[in-house]
Length: 301
Length: 305
Image (cartoon, rainbow over all chains, first blue to last red; front, side, top):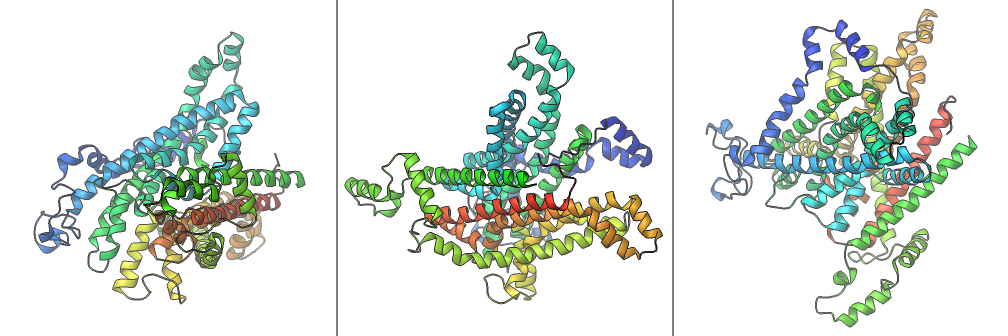
């Protein structure tokens, strides 16, 4: 989104950095070790949640309500993260929350990507009044704080899983559209595109075969950089009570519910919060890594 | 410059119109207000009469025109929950939000700038590493979680501050610090990289050679040249603050516009939601416009196209 691009091939940048740094740093640069360490448990929770979970996340058991983490009181591993005011196991609920969080952000960012990439390609390729209209649409939407737009959509559609996915798709498509449009403009002016057009290649085929493959890297970088923000938005909405509805579990909702027990149960907000930080941190770092790997020019976005 | 300013103004106005359409459409999608306003046993005839009274029987473009004409005059309808004009409610909450956002902005700028610049001048030091770790964490922690942890530690356990509400200056500290955290981290990261870009320049070496004190070199010669991206981000952050008040005000029960929006959404009090979001969106657009225009003034090299 910056106009001041440094046009330097990725290999040159990488080689230069590699010469100066010790080998451990080079390994860290080649492989996203830290993001993988952070995200692996979250992804495992999300995919295999019900198999790992020690209890049913919705199972109420008043006899063990508000127990602190069991390893602190010498009760072994019975309730690793303690229990909530209904005696539900917090560890099982944190595991269940991973699914909602990942599902919503992946689908939201994915749908936003499909819409944004399409609009960006069309806008950049055809130009003219269509480009003006589409980009003004982007301007208009971006002139509204994301959280307000999200609140409006939730108020209009009611809360629930589908609404949250819709909110994230609507909030995040504009970034793809801008980046992909800018890339399309630069790819469009290259010789091979002009050549293909002279040879009579139809527009649709030209966009799909010659332009899309050249802009997809940037779109992937945008996707990975937005994933963390999407996780955060989903959590904020469920904290405000506008996220997924029970029996689905969301970290933001767990944190909101803990507010009444702050004085006696620190573990209620603590563990879902840590899960959230780990997820956002992991996706942010993965996004940074992917950007440096695929498209160092996007550094300022 | 004038041409650029006029063009930006035009885009700003267009955005205002666009946002008003978005708000209008969202509120019409939100459901039939007659179901909320009338008791359950109301007859179909009652509903038709109320729809006529509210103008809901007219075609949508006409309804939108009426909405805009009223909105321009500050008339957003009457709150169903508080039984008073929606705009009056919003304006009554405005000072609380401005107070919170203003202090949070000051904290964010001060901490962000000081830590970012010092981090750049002591590159590679323990302080620099610490700041970079802090920035990475600061950008990844959810505001509402930090807010609750702050309440738990500083209000409940230590008892230094009140847990929520508005009153004394002490009430303001926790929400303002919570809200400042994210923008401070963004500010710190940007001023660090902007300073690093500037510090190697010839005029900085020249300023040192001339015998200026290091502080003067950094804070006067250096910062002035790093100021443009930093000032731009500061403006954007100020605009974002207004949006973030929703979450922070909810945690700390701070009686501002953000809390009002949330309460109104749950009460399905659409006149208030409409009025509040219009005010916030207008402020956001005006602030962004101001940032763009200042940006043009700060940097004579910028091209206006």
